[in-house]
Length: 442
Image 1: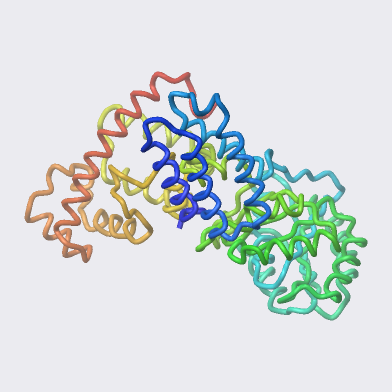
Image 2: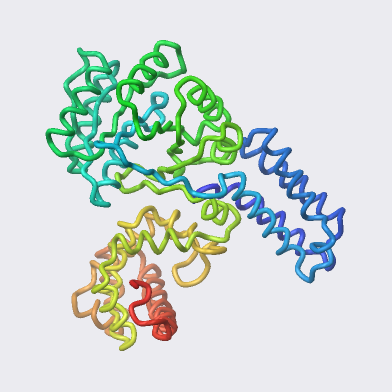
């Protein structure tokens, strides 16, 4: 499910109702604000946050300049977007690392995804040229130590895990010494978690923090727990002094309450969001981009960044050449599907496109299952058929359907969609040709 899909759909209905009036009046705005209030409360946003947010939006929306505008609904959407950005933190909070070695202490409750986040952060920093060291300092859960060691192996980042028989503070001292010896420039410490906040855990975390003197203390919160996550954040802020928040499981059935409340209630910025289980499913948190996703405005910037991580510039130029000469084949299409899958879950990518309820070229329900079906159909074709789809007549379609375990209608639909997509991409390619040389790789 795309991030905050349910909340976004409710906002869309509110704005559609506003557009239904030839002239928007104050009573229409007030009715819309009631629906906005209901949508936010159902998303499990803190009630005080909801009250202040709706008050600010309502006050700005009934101003004379808005009501007298030729497009008051668009003005109100703009106001809601601006207030959402403010609610989410206004500006991104980058992870600045300056220590020698730099250090990040990661804390949170058991089950929030703390250990997985440590590995994702290590992989992200390594991709940017840093040399991280993962540290297993959860001495109460041997399984957490084992998990961190396994994840470290998958990300090709070393792990310091001396075991659970020595105090966490001693593990931290040893890790700092090991980092200096091995010339690792960043230490990421996975600390102990519990099912609930208790004083013993807080005391241990305070001792680890004093020993480590970290550049950052990141609190990992399960976004699916809503208001409970905000209460946990307040406890950690008051007792440990966390500098940033990480929201996990945003790829799940997330109502959005934690993301929309935690910054306003605690004053602690959200720095990262985890949108999947893979080590690459970590994104820096940008308030304006997240607000855009919630309101259906998309997040094209993040989509382009994901594409740049998986598509080589040389390959992109070769693809552009094929599109211009109309030599883009089903083999090329299959290759693009493979790259698309590397970029992340398809429904999340679609959620980054402005206003996408996915209509048109690749149809409404394009998910992982649909991509597998398309891939099976193409792989059931001969190389000659992939290069020249016009050769695929009725008998060949039946053979391809049998070979891929699909119906002839599925094969027909794919071939039609491919031709539509090729025409659409050719138009996009012509548009790109009018852009400055090297775009978008300048």
